[in-house]
Length: 168
Image (cartoon, rainbow, N blue to C red):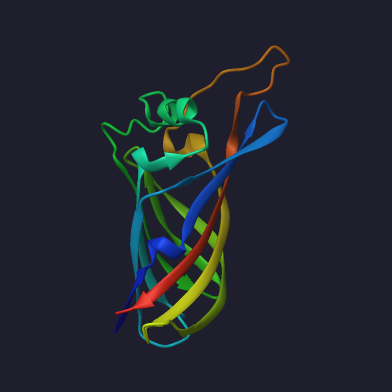
């Protein structure tokens, strides 16, 4: 069995959600960690776990970030992490995502973008991830409409990741 760690300095885990039903707001988590366990070189049937630190959310707006970390959304004081565990097979990462102590199945599309040797002779592999969830499935129930009747924050959240792994 081979273990790989996420190289957080060369990776990003992000999201997009509709604002007012007209435009996307993007963000990412600045602090996260994760591992991948493989039994072969092609990552088929690899076990994947990762954890995001909620308070590290960054939407390029400190007031919005504080609002998202508050009890109205992620409640970072009570639930400081978001956790995922799953299995990679046939370019699909299927597993369980836990937000606000609510665990639901999630399926993400995965593209292995390459493998190679780093400048310190370490083995590396790259992946792109994409998928979507409904925020309300995880208890993220903030609900406010504008005058036109559009949700201030959309229900569908698009997930994305640019992940670089280092083999231990």
